[in-house]
Image (cartoon, rainbow, N blue to C red; front, side, top):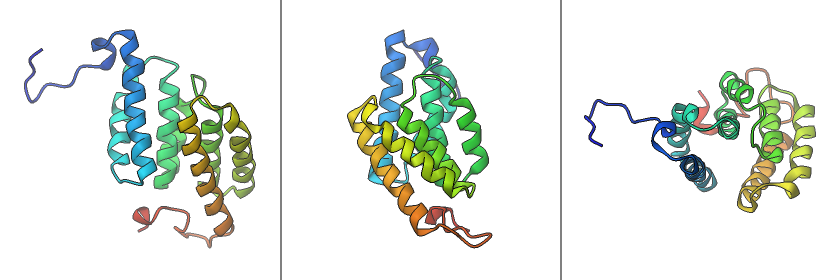
Length: 170
């Protein structure tokens, strides 16, 4: 297949056999997980690619990608973008502990510490039934970081950016 520099990349749905969807989704999200796990800023690049290609994945998997994008947006402090991706994450093949973590992270961001603590408990309880042992480790670490943020910032002053990542603070 020949393409000019100005042509758009073909949709994964049109170019891959059905097994290829799964491989591509796992590969792309695994790269994103690895970047997040290493604390690298290129997690933004992975999130941007996934958000631009999400509709090329089969229904059922799009929800898992949307959930990861919601988690990414809460880490950036973007409430509206997180809500958008959470709405797209309903249903599908989604790990219950990841869903509860995303909900807890959003609750923390909007200033609902009680809801966040409750949902972190749900996420922790569901870890043992996770779909992937490696993802369970990442989820447990993210639960711990979210809990630590809650414990150290229970009552930020109005207008505070204390709950946002340092690079997101104005």
